[in-house]
Length: 235
Image (cartoon, rainbow, N blue to C red; front, side, top):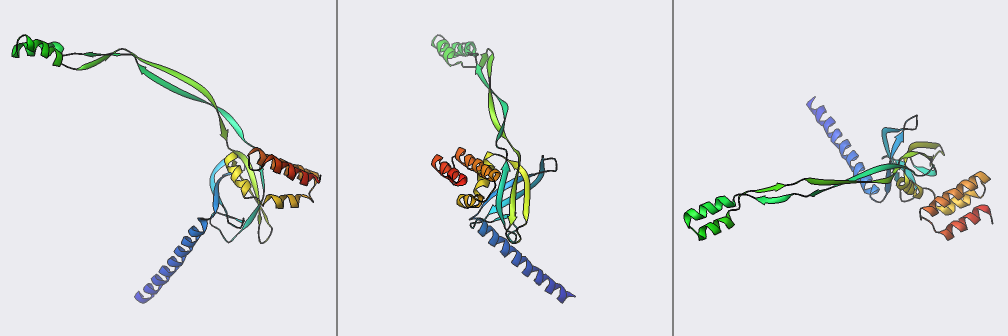
């Protein structure tokens, strides 16, 4: 029994070493990749406590969390755009209007007179610092300003499994910063244009809206937008 225990223990150590090596390799791999964390929505479209991490490899393929065995292509991001709420920001400044008064000079003068009459009185008066006391009120002023703060809103991304072509839809909370990153996970824009040439008018319009968003976010230039629009409209 002791021998069996040692063998099982050795096998356990071997498995642990293999698993740890795989973890180290994964961390080295992910140093050259980008990722975003998504807060998933529940069935009612509200944020839940569940999160996933989307990783983008250098070849553009995507995997979820640390499951590198299942690879996807990101084919669409559906989001209505940024929404804001007004928040009130208050600042309070406090100024001290009081005056310092010094006590104890008379005591110093008395002590000076006893030790050295005449001159000692003057010296004692000057050196008798005593305690400092402040009289007066604190004046506070409060200013308020309204600020526009972006809020997260529902969005979905569509992923296509590389091997089977199966479509996976992820419903999550999105904002402008997150959307900017996710748009870079999409296929190259030239590929998007090429694929859209055989699409319906609705698809072409959707592609133009997408490029307009890239223009508004300063990801592409006005000239590039006009060129892509002409290609989409076959002008």
